[in-house]
Image 1: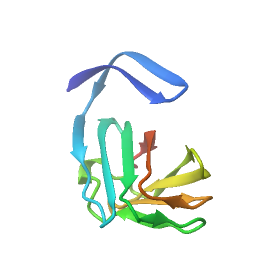
Image 2: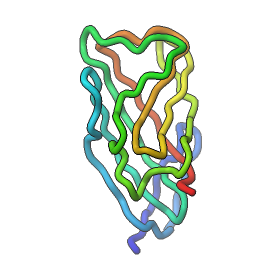
Image 3: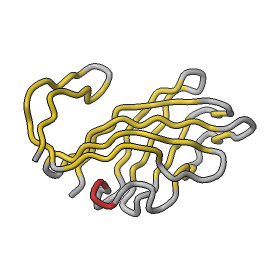
Image 4: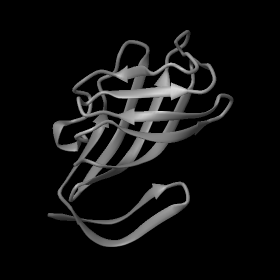
Length: 131
């Protein structure tokens, strides 16, 4: 096991110290047409922490109050998938709050409470249990 020296869990909490992590993945997620996403995921025991950024291409919108799958099944590497769908609240400038979902099938979804019209970008720090 390698050691992770420090990471930001969310915008208000920074965890610093030496703790073992099982594995790390970083790169670009496979996404549906019109979306881009990238990030880094660390697995620490049964917990995944990391960062996630996404963007819509010009002319692509995420409609309000509807779940939109931005990355299809299999986008999250199998070692980092939760066993049930996990949602996190997000805040997006201009459209208010919303939710991101990291799903058991490896897909990633978003639900905005306002229209998110492209080209727009967002990002978040993620943390969820995998079992």
